Image 1 (cartoon, rainbow, N blue to C red):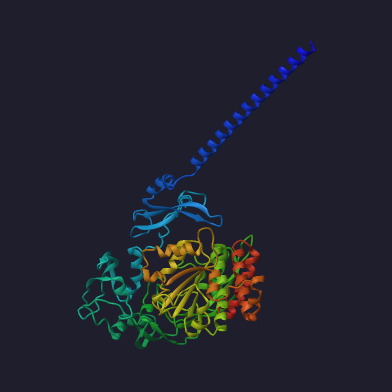
Image 2: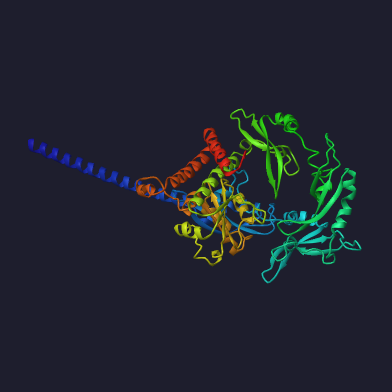
Amino acid sequence: MNYNNSCSRKKSKREQNKTFINTKVDLYQKKSTTMVNVVKKIEDINIKKSKTLDDHQNDIEDIVIKKKGRIIGSEWRYIGKNKRKTPYFLIECNRGCGYDCDEKREFWRDKYELKPSKRYPDGKWCPYKIINKSLIRHQREIEDIVRMKGGKIIDAKWRYIGKNREKKPYFLIECGGDNENNEKHQWWVEKYKLKGNKSNPEGTWCNQCPKGKTLEEHQKDIEDIVRMKGGKIINAKWRYDEKNRKYPYFYIECGGDNEYNMTHQFWIYKNDLIPDKTHQVGVWCRECQSKTLDQHQNDIEEYTKWRGGKIIDSEWKCVYHGKYKAKIPHFYIECDNEEEKHRWWVAKGNLLPKASNPTGSWCKVCNDRIRAVSEYAHIIIEYYSLIYLNLKNCNGRHEDILDEGSRPDLIINRDDNFKSNIEPHQNIISFSNNVVLTNIEEIAVDFTMSLIPSNIIRKCFRNYQNKKRYLLIVLIQEEGIVTAQYMQNLINNDAELDNEEKELIKVINFDEYLQFLNLEIKLDLLNFDKWNSLSEKEKEIISMFRKTIKLSIDATESSFALKELIKLSEKNGKLLGIENH
């Protein structure tokens, strides 16, 4: 009995062990099958998630077609600090897309920029939409020239010139009949020939009216106007502007139309005497028409209250209009902003609405904070840039008007001192390695806080750069894809600029600007010895540059930073000779 019982117990244990082992094997097989299925599912999900460029292109095809464009290229780009893989597409924009363009353009866009968003409900499109000049805008540039010469524009069209079929604006002009028989003539002329150049500063005009009017003939045109105002013409002469164009200029004696019955004598251009839209009765003796500051203040008192502000102070300020000084009434205004009140100086003529500015100017911080911050920052940056140039025995000019009428923020002379004291220590512009740059005599520097690409690109069309002048555009801030490199790529792809002109333009950030001046030194352990080797003045300049950039970026949102920036700007503005800027 005992033997049989023991055998049966052993048998039952073996069967239990066998059953346990089989159960374990089944469980293992089930787990491994489950794991394989999970891996397969993950792979399937990854396959679904990772889109190709073609997939991304399909997502935006309808958007591009609706905007009358087409996709002609694509590539992956790695964006930001995390190097995020982003699909980019090369778009060809049709001239019928609705923007002010004259031809098809090509540009790169991030897929997600093209799609509508909260910030851009229609999505982003062609960055050149403001840059391309239409015939109408070309016409606006020559309207004053044609009118001054007594003519008018009849028609306009594009012509394709030379082997390269270069597109140029042509205009059909009718002259004013400045000849013995007073006959009017019509002819087609290219815009740039009409405007004039170095070889022909006055520009071309009607070949059948070579003589034009004499001074005596011009005087006859205004004799009735002068007599009606009670004055008389004492003398006349020709005056020439910066482009060597001549204008009739007259020396007038007024009839003493003032409370003291005193007569005054003054020089005036013929066209200023003749009534127009701006001056419906024409310009006359300023002495007789002069007002006191109180009278000027009375003129704007109600208007200022209506705009929600008040006048704090007033003063006369002498302002240059071309070569001549004019005494202009300026007022210190405080706006009625509930959150933060701002104060600023403004000329009476700029405050009031006029044809060129129908709304008049008002608090620039309330209207456009970014632009206001940029203007305040400019003064400080330009001041310390000039201080540094003087320290290195180099020459620079602040907001000097160029021959072409443009006015960059800073002009740096590339003279011998610059070539020996600054140029060898920077690698931003390779003057010696580029044949186009060997004859550069000046560097025009233009600072900007704008993050709108079209605003930055417009700087390339202000005649800052030429064969002897290089343009350096300095971004005070960068954000997202709007970096110095991004803007440089846009400029390099711009069809309006030829290749030589593109080599005369460079976009850099502010750190690169400091490197250009050989001032890219940070106060840390690695640069401690180099920092100590600098003069106290150089340390001050670097510190003020850094402080200004930080205040500028903070001031776009912080009222405290804005106040500090304004204080610094006013202090440096006085040192620069910019009173009440």
